[in-house]
Structures are given as structure tokens and as C-alpha cells.
Image (cartoon, rainbow, N blue to C red; front, top):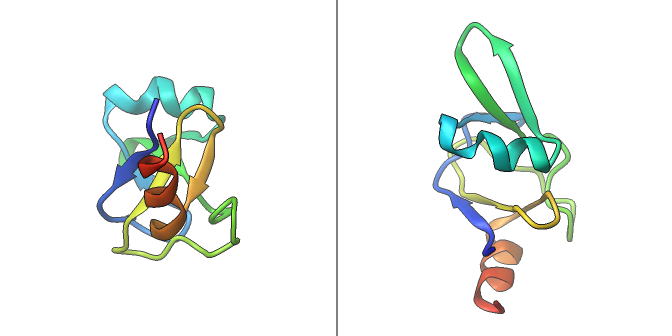
Length: 83
């Protein structure tokens, strides 16, 4: 499965996701629940798995559903293009 691109991060630690992505988030061990602001969130506080760049609010990022890795725009688009 190709890396999933998120258009904008809600914040530096997590981004709200819909129910359709919960299975992927669980398999990646990145699902967060129980917040007043929403029901399901994807945790990305560890930044890009390749270069360590932090996910920035309002900026795009990727989730590789096969590895569970968060990727910055550069590394996510490279990995997506390579498949």
C-alpha cells in the first residue's frame, strides 16, 4: 500500500482522522482516542522516520501504512513515487 498523504497536520503531535483510517492507525500503533476535540487522532509526535524532521502544524506529511512510519513531505513523496 502506498504512503498516505495528509494535506495538513492539525498540530505538532496529532491530527484528527476519520473512522476510515482508524484500522491503519491501529496497525501502525498511532491511534489516539478519548480527547474532547474529536474522536480519532493519528499520533505523529516522533517526526519523520528518515530525517527526524518534526511534523509542523498546517504542513503536509505522510503515513506509511506498511511500516507505521511518519514521513515528511520530501521522504513521503519519494517513497510514494518509488512504489
